[in-house]
Length: 176
Image (tube, rainbow, N blue to C red; front, side, top):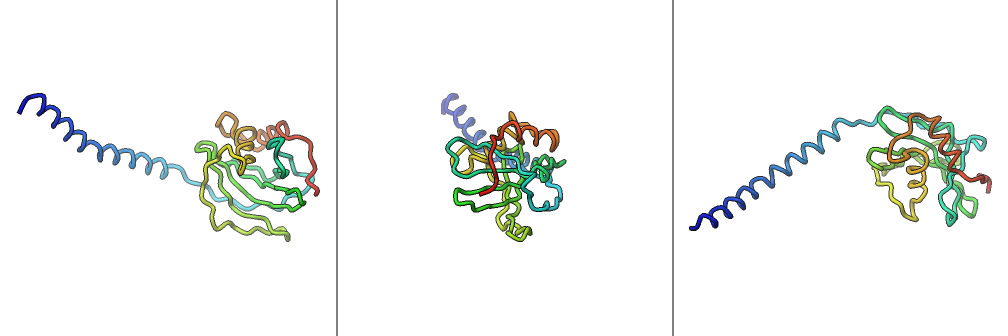
């Protein structure tokens, strides 16, 4: 065989051997990052009160109205902003949820939904989901970009989040 052909074969063999090793290193790094971060324990907040609601501006085309309960906002040591969200539909139906947003990974999580009697129903599907700029979850993108994770960086505390919410919101009424 020619030296050039032997060199090509050697490169292919090295590449085939290195490919699984590279994947193993990437998997180990992912596992290390996942093991390093841990979500802290939290308590579900009290139901939102009208006087504590801050409007969230989503877009001029939004048909529903969105509000965050200012007293429910917390910034955890785990890097998660937790908050109670109220969505009021055009028909006046009110949906309350307790959610979390992780700025570092641009993800959100649904913890519980509010019942009419003021109690919570924990979510069965509370996996982390990517915050995307889409019509379906535009309000999550608005909260991420304008209120909880400006420039992709988590707010320092709940007061900073409340201030950003008040500056970004447009006057509206939660009643319906």
